[in-house]
Amino acid sequence: MVAVSLKLPPVIIEAIDELVRIGPYTSRAAVIRSILTQELPRHLAKYQQAEDSEQVMPTQDDGGNKRKNISIFMPRRMFVSIDRMAKELGMNRSELIRVAVDHFFREYSEVFRK
Image (cartoon, rainbow, N blue to C red):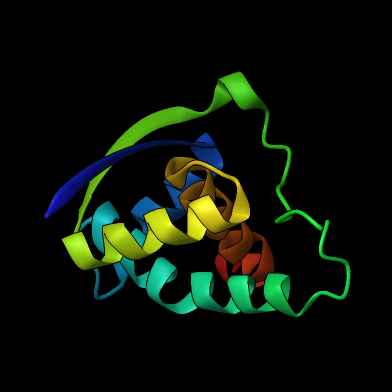
């Protein structure tokens, strides 16, 4: 396992904590690993299929300095895969993870409001 630190908006950390509380997840890291396994390949595929080769991976404005640090552990194979994707997209791995998690919660926000 490899440790990765990232900064997430407090509202997303609260949503992750709620998934841990009500769902089958045992930790924040488990939620984020699940999101990365499901969402990151989908977002990367959209990026790669874009006709404009200059297009950058979309990001969301989440208040920047209001983000909170969290650390997660992930399997080395996932870490290497994310590192490779981040380099391909010209991002650092923490930013790529943050973008994928942010997009997941924005896309499925209706579920979490109920």
